[in-house]
Image 1 (cartoon, rainbow, N blue to C red):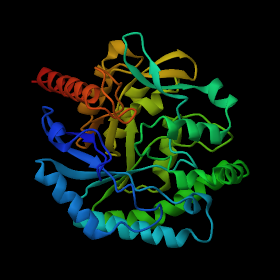
Image 2 (image 1 turned 45 degrees about the vertical axis):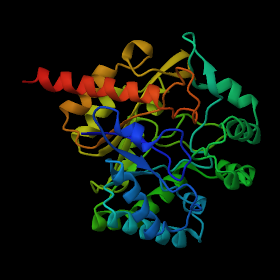
Image 3 (image 1 turned 90 degrees about the horizontal axis):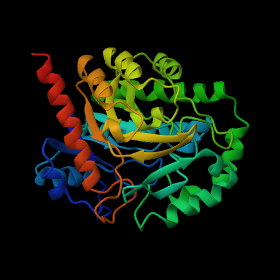
Image 4 (image 1 turned 30 degrees about the horizontal axis):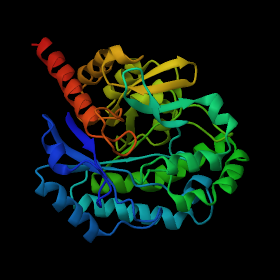
Length: 357
């Protein structure tokens, strides 16, 4: 297992590589080239420069999060083959700089959604929050405006302004699409891409839907153990795997996260893990919390134990953190709370490891 942190390149992060290097036990970062338009090839020279920047700080770069998938692929349009070819070329270029894992998602239109980016918590910190009823009262454009206007000037992955311009039309398109057609479009993508992932030794790791329930009639399919089984059966290669996000799946109170981890880690199909805790105040109403079990609804000991005991050898990052100690940073991606989360998770791993001896 390798503990890493997400870092945003190109001067678009309040957290420096030097600071990340000082977190005990963190060996590397995952990142992306956020300025490359969705669907275009990531240039090799840019990737080489990125790797050199990360390595010069004493950190590894083996995970990319993420290479976004063009909407034409998700829609199954005739133009999808061009974008799939570009995706394959990007995978080839990633392999040339030593990337071993590619996190991505197949969520339509919006990669993730929250009703608030700085919800005040009782301890004086703030965190990302979701209230389903409040979301349903908004129109999609208002949600996009709220997220972009409260981003503190930082790029918000999945909410690129150029994508938001056609959001209304995209939502209407997906509302008329059957869930089975959406699965078929996903399989088409996997069957085209996975052979090249095998060839270039880059494991593909899909992120679950966030939130895991439908909003505005959009298809949500990577949201439960049953649907994950279906997804993995679409292409049975070990290179077709998961980014297991405890917070995304844990937003549905029906999901047993330790059981899900045990099942798919034992199959070797989890390549990357986002581990965070959340606290529900009602069904489909939650705030993101500090990582320890006592702070939220998820049993972090049982989750980490499930990874450890089932042979997980991939990458873990502490997912979104609260804003604490007056830090000013990209919502969810400050330094302090994620550093606390990393050391907490590493402490759990060490304790579980030593208890087996």
